[in-house]
Image (cartoon, rainbow, N blue to C red; front, side, top):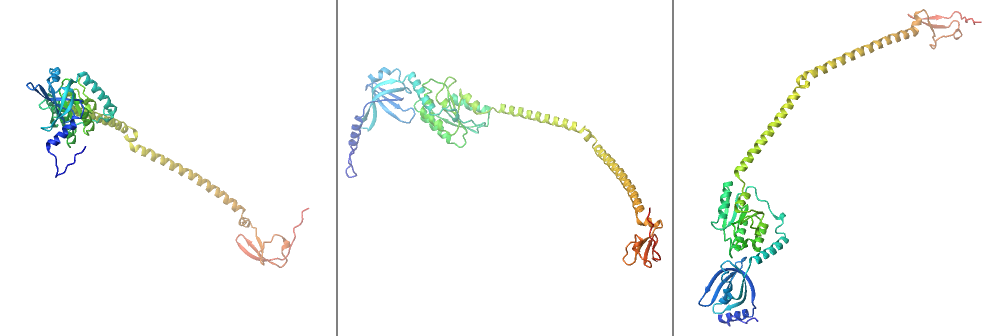
Length: 411
C-alpha cells in the first residue's frame, strides 16, 4: 500500500527504513548461487560475514551466517569458491543495509558444474552460436592485435614474444584483466567490447594459462559467450592447454590450443613468407623462361620453313606461273585470230564470187527500164523503140530496143 506523503508532510528516515524492513520481512527464503569474494569470520560474535558475487554481473550482496551453518563447510570455503546458499533477505534498519541470513551453505561440486556447462553448451549450440558458418576468417596479416589476458602473465608473454618473433612490425592493444575469480567475467567482457570498437584492431586474442576446471569457469560463462558471439572482430580463444576446452573455444572464430599456438595462427612468420615469396618468384621465373624457350624454338622452326627461309621464291614461282599463263593466253588468242582471219577470207571470197559485180566482170550487163528502174528479165517486158539503161562492170549507158526476139522453146 502506497504511503501518502508531500513536501509539507514528509516521513522520517527511520519510518522509511522500518517500512522497507517490513516489506523485506515478508519475503521468503531463496536458494542463491554465487562466488565468494570476501570471507570475514568473527569468532567473538559467533558469526561469519561473506560477500557473495554474481560471476557474470558486477553485483554482490552480503551474507551473514552463524558458526553452526558455516562450520560444516569451513574447510572447503575460501575466496573464489562457488556456493549455493539457502538464505532469507534481511534488512538492517539502523544502517539501511540489505543482506542475506544464511540457513544452509552447499559447495557447488565439480560434477554439478560440468553438468551445468553441458546443458549450457547444448542450449547455446541449439541457438546456432557455435555454427561453423558464423565463424569469420582471420586476416592474413593483422596490423594491430587486441589481447585480453592477465597482467604480467605467462600467457601475455607467450603471445607477445612469439608474435613479434614471427612478425616484428605487428602492434598490440593489450587489456590486462582478472582471468579467474568473481571479477573475471565482467572485466573480460568489457575488454572485448572495447577492443571490438577499436578502429585499428583486426583480431582479438583472449588468452589464459592452464588451470583447474573451476579456474577456467569464467570462460564458459553465458554472458561472455554471447559477448564474443556479438563481436564484429574475429576472436581467437587461447585458454589453458590442449585438453582444456571452455565454451569460449566453441564460439570463437578460431580455437588455439595454447597462447603460443594463438600467436602462430594469427601472425604469419616473416621468414616463411619470404621463403614462399622467393620460391614463387623462382617458379614464376622458371615458368617464364620455359615459355620463352618454347616460343624461341617454335619461331626458329617456323623460320626454317621454305616460305620464310626464301620468301622471294614464292613470288618468283607465282611470277613464272603468271608469265606462263600470259604466254599461253597470247598463243591461244593468236590461233583464234588466225582461224578467224582465214574464215573471214574464205567467206569474203565466197561473197565476192556470189556478188552481181563478179557476174558483171565476166561481161554480163543488167538492163533496167528507165521509167521505173525495174530490171528486165524477159523480152516480153519491153517494146521496140523503148530506151533501157544498161549497167556493166565499168559503168552504165542507155540503149534503144530495135527488135524483140523471143527465146525458142525447147522441145
